[in-house]
Amino acid sequence: MKIKYKMGASRDVDNFSDHHSPTSIKSTAKKRSHFVGWRFGIISGSVSVFVVLVLNLSFTLWTLSRGGIENQRGILHDGDCNEVRKLNIVAHLIINIFSTVILASSNYCMQCLSAPTRAEIDKEHVQGKWLDVGIPSLRNLRRISRKRALLWILLGVSSLPFHLFYNSVIFASISTNDYAVVFANREFIDATSLEGLNGPYSDDPDIATLGHLLGLQQAARNGSLERMDNSRCIQAYAHDYVSDRSDLLLVGSDENSTSTPTLFLIRPVSYNDINERGGDCVHDMYSWICPKPGCLDPCQAHLPQVLTDASHWKPNLHIGVFDFEANFCLSQQTPEGCKLQFSL
Image (cartoon, rainbow, N blue to C red; front, side, top):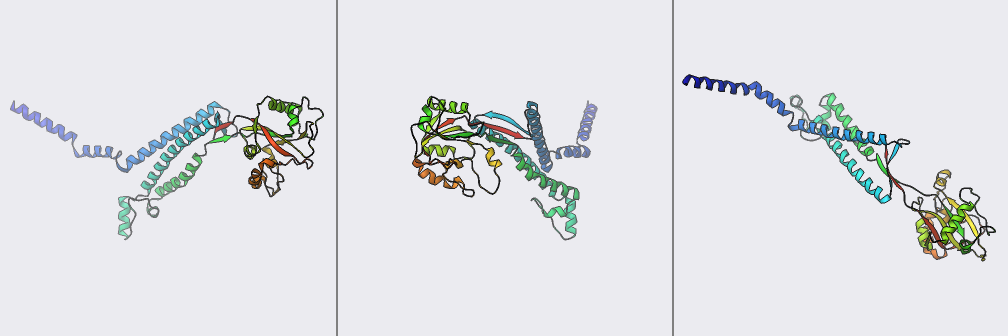
């Protein structure tokens, strides 16, 4: 029994020495060292960036599978503007979280790359020089290895542009409406026929058509157009991009008005007009609102004065014949159309 006891004790000691030998302890410490200190930070940052990469690739593949991409742009949602605004906020919140993760990981790696090793510190100390320790340092880049310095520069150059461009991947857009401004008198609304109308009107085949006028006239009769006073009318249409309204029937009279239905003018207003006009002139979509806008004197500069005297509003007909004064307007409302889009 005594011998067995000693042999058992000896075996236990041997087992202990096998599991706790210097070689075993160094091996365990080496394995654990990869998950502590700066190595843990590098691994965590790499994993985080990889997760963001996978999510980005998944999103890209999902958008490509949906189709409908033109000029490297696609539509994520098309509908109510309030809903699109909310989705846009959520999308950019997620984008900024992702970009912050990438930026933080990149910054941590840059600090690790610029941190000197023990050998590099000793080398500088021998020469009577010093290195920065524990802080981001540009000075250290001249003392560390060329490979680490190049990696540091690559991360630094790519981080800021990536953060800026990342936010422009998803964006919201609003649809604008082309519309026609019809200048007419009260009798025009109640006219049973458009034959024999007084006054010239536009020759534009897309706007000044009989069907278009009849449709607008019928809408004015059945009350489907919103009636607004001059001030509200000016404020509603004094924008280069009108998204919630369409055709406008401007009801008024001139100094020679009679009881005869009169159609003074049909004026088409299109966003493309701004792009087609050249020269040094300052153009705006609503120049018809102001009496006499000039080339370098846009309507926007005169809006406060026009609104102050809105009860005697005389819009610009560009025909030089009628001294037209607006009494009120009838506006065709349209639902706003907004899109949440992405760019590849």
